[in-house]
Image (cartoon, rainbow, N blue to C red; front, side, top):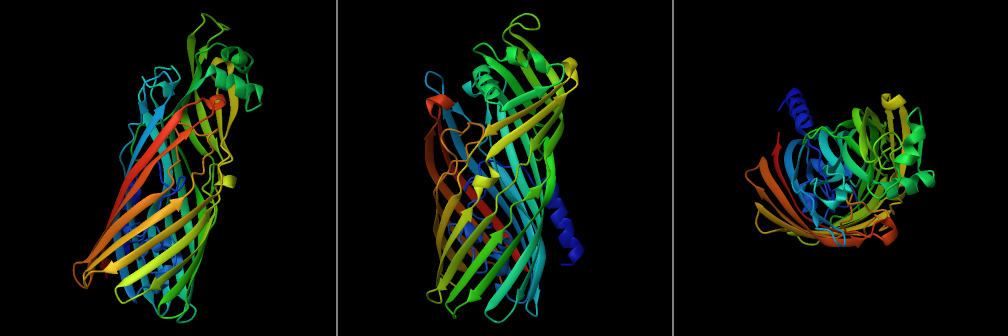
Amino acid sequence: MKMNKVLVALCVAGVVAPQFANATNGMMMEGYGPIATGMGGASMAYDNGNAGMANNPATLGLMADGSRLDVALGGLHPDVVAKMTGMPDAASGGTAYYMPAVGWTSKKNGLSYGVGMFAQGGMGTEYKSTDWVGAGSGLSSRSEVAVGNLIVPIAYDVSSDLTVAATLDFVWSSMDLKMAMAASQMSSMYGAGLISASGGAAATLPTFLGGANNAGYFNFSDNSSFTGAAKSNGFAGKLGMTYKLNKQLTLGATYHAKTAVGDMTSNSGQMMMVDNAGAMGAAGTTYTLNGKITIVNFQFPETYGLGAAYQATDDLMVAADWKRVGWKSAMKNFRMQFSSTDMGGLNMDMTMPQNWKDQDVIQLGAAYKLSSALTVRAGVNLASNPVPNDTVNPLFPATVANHVTMGAGYAIDAASSVNGSFTYAPKVTVTAPAASGGYTIDHGQMNWQLMYSRSL
């Protein structure tokens, strides 16, 4: 296939690449590509296809000379239920999200290079207007966060044993949000200095926060499965290496830099304020302000990891990885700004503390050749929940911890193959303390990936 055709395929994938929600190591996927995902996400030290550019780019140096095209589709199927004492359970309607991916690589004379497009991570939920999550607003509540990247990798075989690699990643992010906030919550945040405001409407803001009902409703959402209302882009990069200790054992290591994307912005944002105290007219009157929403410094974290792959027999390979995800730095706060010229003008800055914890992930897997054409895989992905109970939010329940995975690959002929994987994440239950709402969130998942590969 000529290079221009590959680029066309990548552009098409970019057009249809959707948002997706509730990725499973915090906001990240449990693995990239069905070969790795079938083995618990372990991917640091063996050839796992073109998805290696999203895992450890040095594994691209383990491929045979020639070119390879991978086209994949994945599905995430979260099951999220938010519970509040005395209220009907609120089940998220966001139960199916689909993610295309495509990658092309070529290797010659020890040099590997290529281009690929992958969804990196995200999270989200969708609740009905009658659910308690809306804080009595009577309006629907939803969130969708998506981060994707276009990756350009290069890998070089320094020797027959050592490969080093790097990537340049063009990163884009988008977000939809429909969020109601209770008067008590906003009043507490205002008193703690987490909400500040200026402009003609700012003087009345404290009086709007009185009463027992909802005080504000933030809305920036295009209701599309393919885009988010607030958008931004930027860059990131990766480093990687693999080293063959002997014919059986290969070691791998990688470092993924923290993203450097701009603030996500939407010029079609809305803030609805309820005048609970009757400061401007009849008590309970709702005022709608139109303006610009900015999500400040929303980044994906740096990640580093080590791994090993051991070819125990001609038919059996086992792999083990460890990676550290730096959520503590990336998800310290969720900061949102709103500016409007309505009602005399309002510029509001709101910070919601998140205080996520860094996450250690253990990925273990095995692959066994049942025949020259058929390989079966299985693995586990073991991780902690990075979200503290006192900051977990029904709109952002990135709480899934452990996963059990399986998969298979079949060689159709000498040039073509298909690979698939299935992941089951058992339900995790977290309960916020009474001071943070006292609600409980149940979150489990079933995910899959399917890929067609062809040597060119």
